[in-house]
Amino acid sequence: MTDYTLYYWPIPFRGHFIRYVLAAAEATWDEPATDALTALKSRAPGDQPYPFMAPPLLVDHETGRSLSQMPAILMSLARAHELVVDPDRDLRLICDASDVLFEITRHHGAALWDAESWADFAATRLPRWMQVHEALVRASGAGFLDGGDEPMLGDLVLAALWHTMTDRLPPLDPLLETHAPATRALALRVAERPALAAMRAGWADRHPLYCGGRIEASLCEVLGM
Image 1: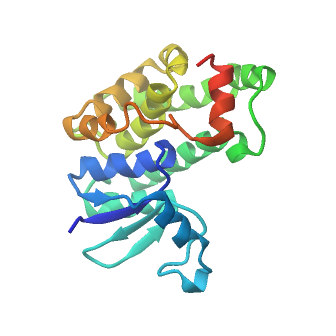
Image 2: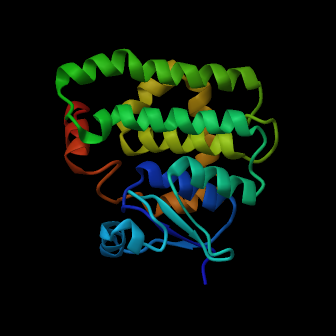
């Protein structure tokens, strides 16, 4: 039996934050097919084994406990696998990441990107987020945020955010290199760890690339992909 079951759509996006932590912890997990997730999500809350609105949903097979919501899952996993050093900072980085995902998908697809709206975002909000994290990384003055030899939760969150984005949407990599070179380097160090590289290799040629749906199509269009 695997250690965990992760219910999430077959896309990187939020799921990669959890996958990064699971891989770093050398945990095993399975991911049910989309039809199983859809069936579970569509049930009335009172009829679900664990009431939730939308994935991700993680089931811990050792404890029998289930959790939804990316921040709660990440903090729980990191505590269980001793990946937390500064919980306040780590939760803040998770909340930052959620905000960035919300913005890059235009409020989760409430609107689609066009050339004008993307040009404004890529010149203002997105570089600002990169610079915020760059300041934090530079202030740490270490190879990883907490100065150790292994990436901890804060490092994993930054890598899951920025490496996933630039890996799946390569035209954004020069923007990250310009505005947050130290953050880019940290994210790359984390992503290239053997367990994480092995996890990512399974996604190398997959479509959708990043977040899926019409919002991904509009992102690819404005990025010339």
